[in-house]
Length: 110
Image 1: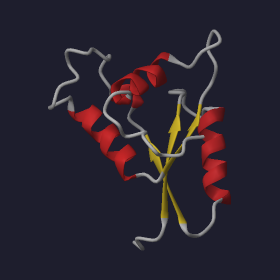
Image 2 (image 1 turned 45 degrees about the vertical axis):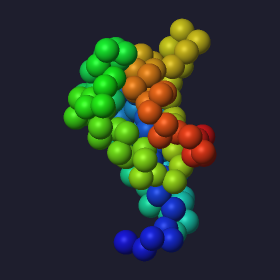
Image 3 (image 1 turned 120 degrees about the horizontal axis):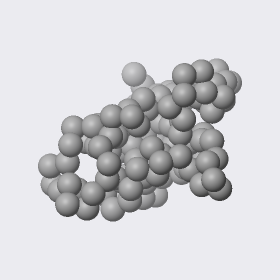
Image 4 (image 1 turned 60 degrees about the vertical axis):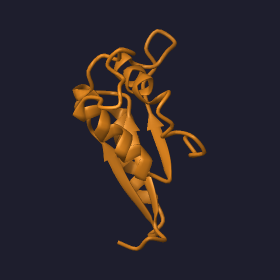
């Protein structure tokens, strides 16, 4: 893989099979330039509930995986449903796991 390629991590905030949010991300990936690599994060349902006590130097494997995928990405695209004027709990939980670890710092997110 060429190191000059842009790596985008796509995250759907919906766990629903055939989600319109996931379908939007797939449509975006089909419209992308040839120098862009799209990777889909598919682990929201595997993340444990966030707890500051569990956010140690050795977090659960699913959290390590999310953080590593975010670290390797040049940018992130999130497409999510709205539930009660907010994001779904699974997406909020994922964001809680990375809020203090720094993977989103200086990284474009849409």
